[in-house]
Image 1: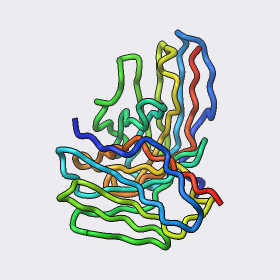
Image 2: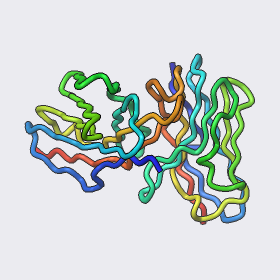
Image 3: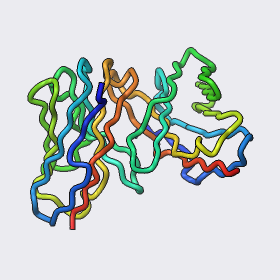
Image 4: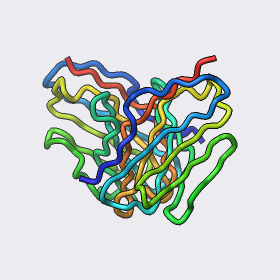
Amino acid sequence: DAGVIQSPRHEVTEMGQEVTLRCKPISGHNSLFWYRQTMMRGLELLIYFNNNVPIDDSGMPEDRFSAKMPNASFSTLKIQPSEPRDSAVYFCASSRQGGTGELFFGEGSRLTVL
Amino acid sequence: SQKIEQNSEALNIQEGKTATLTCNYTNYSPAYLQWYRQDPGRGPVFLLLIRENEKEKRKERLKVTFDTTLKQSLFHITASQPADSATYLCAREEGADKLIFGTGTRLQVFP
């Protein structure tokens, strides 16, 4: 299996622009997680899905953030409009058993908002 | 909030020694804890899971303990090698499906 695939790996954009991050989970995994990592705050859970349904989005910082999972093999995290404080590495992870089992992480999308 | 804390200072040890990393949690008593390794520019990679009814779990040179009285987990790497240099993350479950991570401890093993 190719593992969790994220794109783009790097994104540099200007404040106010829309940013869309993409994730393809491992086939057969029924849970998908979006995390954000910064030096100051570490790895923060933004939102997670079970069987394509959003279960908990309490970690999503603001209404500027939205996430979708239209099918079992694809998810997006969108930021509109983006701000400099959104600069971070965004990780997608998937698992067979929600958070009770091993999470498989992608390589992350490094976002820089100027 | 339900916190999980790791020593933010880097741990520097000499090759061949045992590295011990600490993970403390407050309030909520998790049913299990997980440990991950993260290399620079990469995503975290799962290492071990330990349940609250398990005192200790081992995998090759790795050992994890779980002390529910002290609300603490210790992560040991025996016979450490420079290749073990990385950031190690502790994570606890919250509810049925959420996994909450600590900020991680950076380990540097020098020859």
